[in-house]
Image (cartoon, rainbow, N blue to C red; front, top):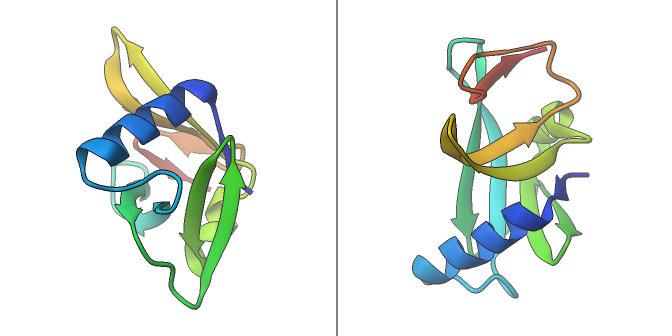
Length: 109
């Protein structure tokens, strides 16, 4: 399961509305892909449909879909949003990551 912090929820709802999505019915698609300086990187986008092999979760009023492959890398992750001096954006607090890069956008197991 993926958890969503309160600050991430507020930003997701805002960005979904800006992009023509409805946070009550549409999804946040979270995934993992090859790349980044640590080997794997996070992928986050909005989606209106789920696929047959997607896992579906809801936390803090946010509907999340994850493909089966990415799910194994993301179990227990918390999605947060940071607006601090080090940059603005979504942050994945992933307990499965052994190493992360300095920007926090990639990881390895």
